[in-house]
Image 1: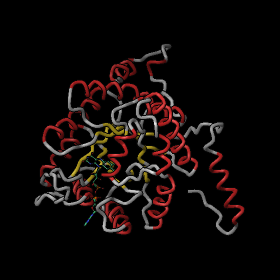
Image 2: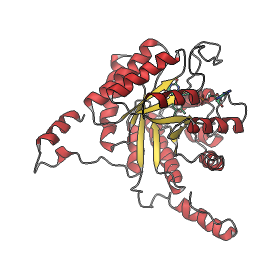
Image 3: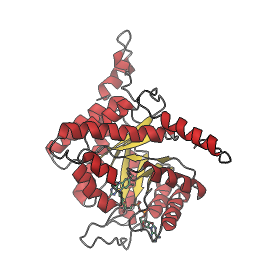
Image 4: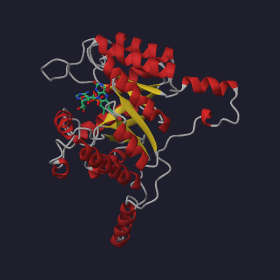
Length: 333
Ligand SMILES: Cc1cc2nc3c(=O)[nH]c(=O)nc-3n(C[C@H](O)[C@H](O)[C@H](O)COP(=O)(O)OP(=O)(O)OC[C@H]3O[C@@H](n4cnc5c(N)ncnc54)[C@H](O)[C@@H]3O)c2cc1C
């Protein structure tokens, strides 16, 4: 965050105006934005096609990395693994594999992590995960990692991974208090995590205050805002109840009446989230992690409005194409 003068209210007000004017429509596009994209592993052939079409659309935006979520149950885990492997084999993208503590021994999780390391994955998003039974109450596996901080410590023994962890601007729903949750984030960083990616949020002030509180708690690693493009407001509102993200009244009003108007819904969602990102950028955030839900269109449009454009690849220059460029071109999707 810039150094805000606090001893002069006029200066503070002027700073505030400057920051906000940086988000106006006519403001020049930032050219320092980095993005990453989250995908989930597909369960059917149709979903697989949708995923890879989305990856193909978003890949030219040159994301810092693309992450693949991890679910409980053998087949879901297998699909994470095969999606990550395909990203490595068929694209130039850097995959980040999510890993959770749920329903597995430390030995089983360590083996998954070791396999990732051996196949060349260097970035893990380390999470506790959510309970898989209907009780809704998380119980650590008796022989497993209990919490994400324990998983981070375990991963540090396996390889020199780049490790991301989850952070909750609105406090994790199971946390005893905001302070206990911040202490938990600090434990994850102290255990060796390199950065935190936040749960999505719609009230930007809540996020900005959270980052201030994290800095005050001695957490100095990058905190990357998780951004949710709203493809379907009703679904996002339902899911938000479970994950503790507040849906403000103004957001309900904004999407009111658009249930059967997908075109307008899409336009509103794109401009809303682009505005959120540009506000965050005005306050110093330069990296954004998009929850794509395997759909490219909104994320692509928002990136465009943030000045993130397709990067020319080696193949775009037809004057010269050495052999190694040719093979890279074949590898790129
Ligand atoms: C960026 C991101 C990506 C995600 N990806 C996935 C995914 O791929 N798959 C998936 O299943 N889920 C995923 N999730 C959801 C995540 O698994 C849930 O939010 C889960 O409930 C918490 O995970 P965590 O790693 O934050 O847990 P932790 O950091 O372990 O914290 C969980 C809760 O336990 C509390 N706690 C921690 N330590 C202790 C302790 N010693 N005693 C008591 N309480 C404690 C914390 O305060 C918090 O309330 C993701 C979440 C985020 C933010």
